[in-house]
Image (cartoon, rainbow, N blue to C red; front, side):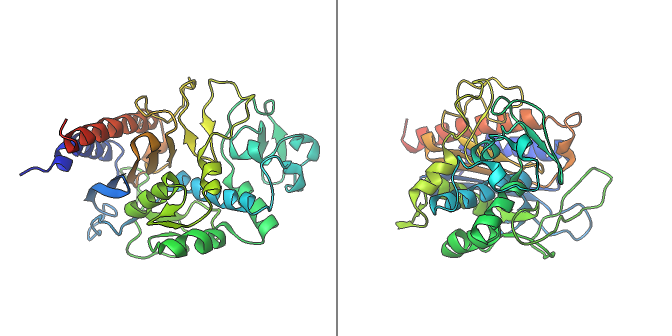
Length: 346
């Protein structure tokens, strides 16, 4: 007999497999949480395409790429809550390797919400648009630099102490060497699989996480740090991270950000918006280059995580990555709503 959960999430399973083929990923994982419980899981494929590849399962750890920036964002929220610096502190107070005149009035708020108007090089900065008037690429490395300078700790040290150890997370970490639970990256149909490794300090693109633990990460934020009756961190930390922090002067059409989370705002009309049309206001999401994403939907008390391992998606001429993530978000809402109806006998 087909269960309610299987029946309601069949469209998501079909879509997940369709995208796996289109982006040439060797493996995928999906985890849905609602009301603090995992209600649906799906694992498919292998860690790479070569002979003898390990099957994807609940312990498989994917490189989540830009999804990692929310981890840096939470470390920043912790530091602000503990009084090390504030959102309104000027960047010039911390980034003395750059010209103070170029940094001008730009603050940590602007850096977190991607609207400094500055293009940062290794040791040079150039102003490319007015402060707070447009959206730019994220610079989590600069936030990690400020964290180290002010707290004396790396991102990884802060999160290991404050989050990973209390929650007993064993499948989350910045990897400096390989192991059999790590899923390889697929760059193209003709390339060899690779692992992106690096320092284990927390600022590099080498955070590997299992689908379940990424869902727990989203659920931790959804519950403002309250897990199984225990307050892991002050709720104010999560409220900082997951509410809109973009300056009020930012034109309404541009996306709004918390601490690097994209936050659903009905006024946005940005061509490159990553949030699906059906996602309700207040939803927050993060999306990485390999296809991994974490979507938190407070209106439904739900978290949706999906994992892929394809960097083939970085070329938008080959794969419509924006259309994909938007459709995924809207499909999650449809499936969650149908699940709730069936559970409630509607």
